[in-house]
Image (cartoon, rainbow, N blue to C red; front, side):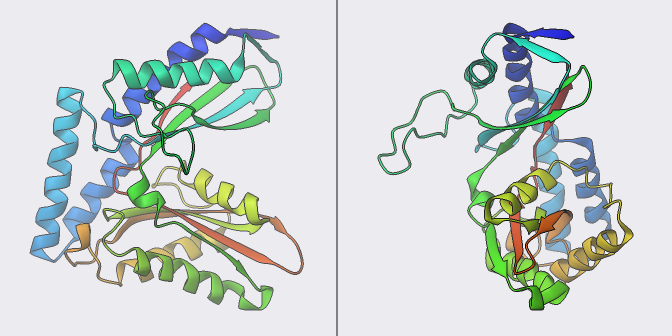
Length: 279
C-alpha cells in the first residue's frame, strides 16, 4: 500500500491553485485559436484576439487569467491502495488556503450563503472524491467563476421529451445566458441520474479536454449537433455577434429512473481552468 502524506497533498494543492489560475489548459487555448481563424465577423475575430493577448500576458507575468479566481473545485481520484497519512479534507482546504494566499488570488468564498461573511482565504474547497483501483492519487483543481456558474440550469424533463427535449433545453440555456457568462463558453452537460447526480455529471464533464469527443458515437454526434446549433445563435465573443458562441462542450450520462429524464448544463466561460497532478 502506498502512503501519501497530508503535507504533500497540501503542497500539491497550493501549486495547482496557482497554476490553474494563471495558465489556460492547452486544449482550451487551441480551441480559442481555432475559432479565431474560423470566425468571419471582424469584431468577433478582433475580440478573440484580445482574449488571446490576455492569456499570453497572464502566462508571461504569472498573473490570474481572470479577476474572478473562482471557487476552488477539487476533484480527487483516490486509489484504493493509497493511504493518506493525516486529515485528507483538511489537507485540501489548507492547500487552497496557501495557494490563494501565496498566489495573491482573489478570495471569493463566503462562509454562509445569506449572511455573506468572506472566509478570507477562499476556503472551504468544493471536494469531489472518487475511489478507483490502484496506487495513485489524481488531483484536479478547477477554479469556477460565478459569472458563468450563475447561468447554469437543471431541468427534470419527461422521458417523452427525448433527445429533442434535451437539445432544446441545452440550446435554450445558451440563449438565455447570452453575453453574461463571457462567451465563448464551454458547456458541461449531464443527462440522466437523479436531481443531484445530473448536476455532478455536468460539472465533471467540464474536465474533459475539448479535443476529445464522447467515446459513444451516438453522444459524440449529439455533441457536434449541439455545438453547431449553439454557435448558430449568433451571440458571439463577449456578446458582440459572430459564429463563436461556444468553444466546445462535453456530455456525461448516467442510468436514470424510468419516469425521469434529468438534464443539467454547467456553463463555463472562455477561461475554463483546470490543473492536474498525480501523486
